[in-house]
Length: 133
Image (cartoon, rainbow, N blue to C red; front, side, top):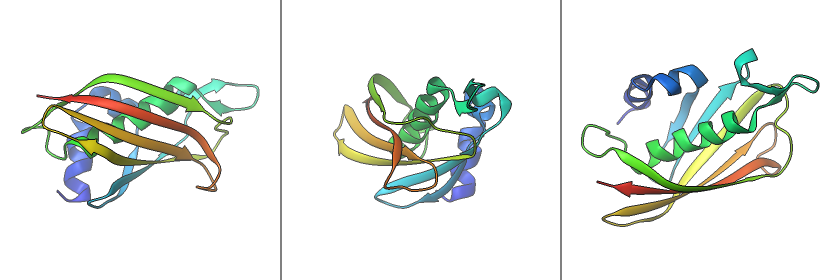
């Protein structure tokens, strides 16, 4: 699928439209996306940081796209997730990369990382497991 087709697929999900992210690159190994901060993303208004749930949801959204690039054929169902928050995601742009660790016939494991200005300084890392039915 092209980037435009992947973005259109994401636009069919109301919550994905709410968090409002853009898929920036997709290849066989990984999917990259970005999300500009808006008022609805703020969890700590004192420092203007992203809410942890928004960060995790963004990472889960990109992980689900990486599992199945065509939801008409295969709709992944999340069964488990682990998020490690490493530092505050301050005002600005949040980037995420999702990489498939293992994909079988019934289950897939996806590793994600989120960062802001420097990919070597992640704000969060995640591990997602999806049931494939």
